[in-house]
Length: 340
Image 1 (cartoon, one colour):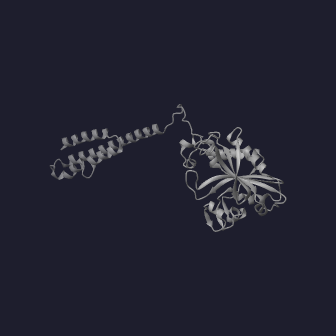
Image 2 (cartoon, rainbow, N blue to C red):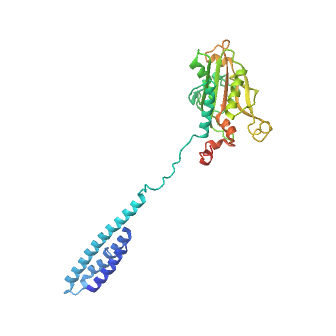
Image 3 (cartoon, rainbow, N blue to C red):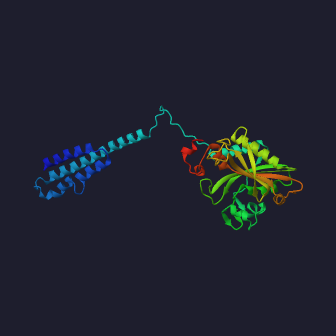
């Protein structure tokens, strides 16, 4: 029996030394010291040993058990130390290594475009103001000559929060608010950038988009003042001398009204896919402020006149930078955004 115990000790010690982690060490413990382990089985079979040898065999078995337990504790300390060393190597920082470049964020193309547009209008003598995205039906429609049964409302499929509150469908909703804010002062020249919301979703439209609207009020303002302002804006926005044209149109809040086109920035008027072979690109709507709208803002249309215009920031960015799908602005695809 003593020879068998020596053999077990030799095998167990080799198994302990080979253990590479705590899981391996636990397997050795179960194999030799567990409930069904080799050494445990010998202690249970002591009844089969010659009575004269039992004390010596029992003592030898218990001493072996203790030695194996001590050896396992020593091996566990070694394994823990090795694991700590490996973890330290993984987490340590070599300060002599070249640093990794840090990715620096930049402005979104729409933000860049809107900032550029605001800077141009500031240079033209306009001030910049802000008004709420959530607007009343009155300022968004009724104050702009669009009562509840007006057919022009069909042009704008709106998001109503309740019958009297709506998500702003256009920044033109600021027109009467600006007049109320500055009345009775004039001249006034104000642009208002901001988000707008309509139930549109196709290649050229988005449910949420950005506009910049502007108004100017003074004595004897004419369409010539409007055209000069917009020509100066277009030339600074798109670069160099540029030709624009005003086409008669209809907006309930201006009279007369005009759509404004610029000579195609790609083909120079020769005709291409971008301008649908017309040579012209529509960029905004404008007109002389309707007398009734002036009255709602507190001004006397016999004393002053004014012009108003509104343009989509996405449309200006698409034309200037050659973006062919409005969805690119909102998908957060870094491959697209990093180009600008």
